[in-house]
Length: 250
Image (cartoon, one colour):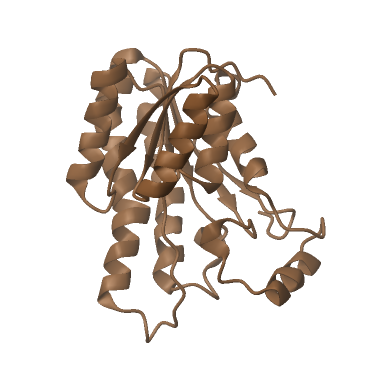
C-alpha cells in the first residue's frame, strides 16, 4: 500500500517497539520524516540506529509522557527541527492487570496520565500548528475495552480507552474545517510486549474465539494506522475502527 508520506513529518509516540515502531517503519519507507519517541532509552536508541542505518530521515526524543511538560517539549522540539507536524500518532500507552479492589491510586493516576492526559496534551499542542497548515492527521490508539469494558486488566484501562473514543469524535468535529482528521483504532488480541502477561494457553483460547482463528500482528495494526494517517483517508474522520479478527463487531 503506497500511501505517499514523502516529506511528511510524523510524530509517533511509543515508537521504539511494537505497533509504534512498525508504523514508523511503514511511513519511513515512504519518505516521511519520523520522530521516534519513547521512555525506554535502550529500545529507542536501538530503533533509531536501525532506522538511521537504513537511511531514513529520523530523529529520536526520549520523553516521559506522564507529565504535561514532557508532552509539550516533544511538540516544540519537533516543530523547531522540522517546522511543521503533519501526522500525530498517539500510540504510547500502559496496561496494568489488577482486580478492582487491588487497583491502587498510583495505578489509576499513571494509567490516566499516559493513556488519556498525554493524548489530550499532545492534541492541544499540535492543534494551532495543524490549523496554520490547514492540514493534519491525528490517529489515536483506543481498544476493544473502550467499547465493551475490561475483564482482565485494571478497570481504569478501559475507562481511558473509552474516553479516547469520545475524544476522537470531539476533535474530528472541531478540527475538520481546517483539513484535520482525527480517527482511532480499537485493537484486540494483538501480541505486543504489553500483552506478555497472557499465557500460551490464554492466547490459544482467545484465538479459538476469534472468527479468523488467530491473533493479530503489530504489522496489521500499523497498516491501518498508516492508512488513516494518509491523504487517501481524507474523507474518514471521527471513526474508531475495530481491528480484532471479528471478535467484536459494532
